[in-house]
Image (cartoon, rainbow, N blue to C red):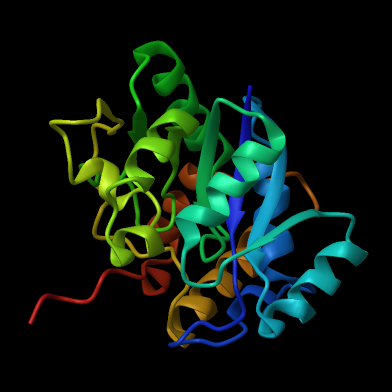
Length: 235
């Protein structure tokens, strides 16, 4: 079983406060957390945010919802993760970001299982993208985080695992892919249009009959192609 860590902050440069934006009556981050908790190979879920005052409203919201929160550096997110790993005494963490309210429990489980079976330092479905952007899952050992912390640049520390997969000569990696390439689809939330897409998905698929999965979203897009939301074309 794996500890899932959802990385969140209020100070998004492109869409400030997006993590608490309303999605069918609930803050976006709480929508995501209910989906993460549905993964069968996740033992517990913690939100990792910063000690910056800008994140106090997020911490208050999560506390009211009974969500466990860990606070650390705003810019050195790698240190934030390491602090939590040391505090919990865990061997492995699952890294998720709070801009993925359509995250799929089945995809989470597939990455965790691949990591467990491979015995590598790191496993993810982002090394070679075949899943929609917004279903990103990374599983990393605490040992790998400790080792990369000794050599990571400031930019790599901000992006936590970047220093690991940029050094394949020093770390063992497992890539999780699917047969169909849906990497052109954009299900993450960075811009107002992204948030409107997520809201449309929740309106169409509802929340009363259990959690919908990525296959349900793909079927919705097939039925309602006008809803399809893709990565912008390269310039």
